[in-house]
Length: 195
Image (cartoon, rainbow, N blue to C red; front, top):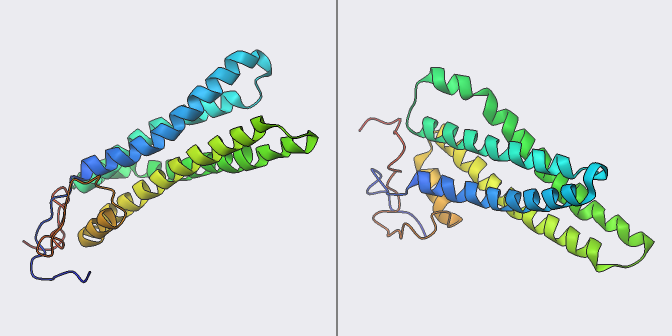
C-alpha cells in the first residue's frame, strides 16, 4: 500500500501502550526462566549449578527493562538533555546485557543442553531445550521490537515509527489506519519540524 502524502500531521498510536506490550513480552519469557531457575535452585540446594545465575540474571534484566522504558518515555516527551545524559549510559549497557543474557539462555541452556542426549535418549533434555529456545526467542523478539522503537524515537523518525508499529502489528489492534490517517505522526512524540 503506497501511503498518501496529503496529511502528515498526526496519527494516534499510544506509544506508551506499545512499549508496555513489548516489555510484557520480554518479562513473560523472563518470568518462566525465574520460576524454572528458582525451582531448580531450591530443589538442588548448594549444588544448583548455574540456576542462581538464571534467577539473578532475569531479575537484573527486568530492572534494566524498566530503566529502558523510562528512557524511551523521557526521550519521547523531550525531557532535558541532562536527564537523558544521566540515563544515557544505561541503554547501551542493558541492551548489550540483555542480548548476551538471552543468547546465553537460548544457545547454551537451550541448544547446548541437547548434549545430554549423547549419554542416551530422554525426553527431558528435549523438553528443556524446547522451552529455553521458545521462551528465549519470544523474549528476544519482543526485546528487538523494543530496541527498534527506542532507536526510532531517539532519531525522531515519527513516520518510520508509525510504519514500524503498523507493519509488525505492535499496537495490538489499537489503531486501524486508513489512507488519510496512515501518515499522521505519533501523538506522544514531539516533532522536529515546525508546526
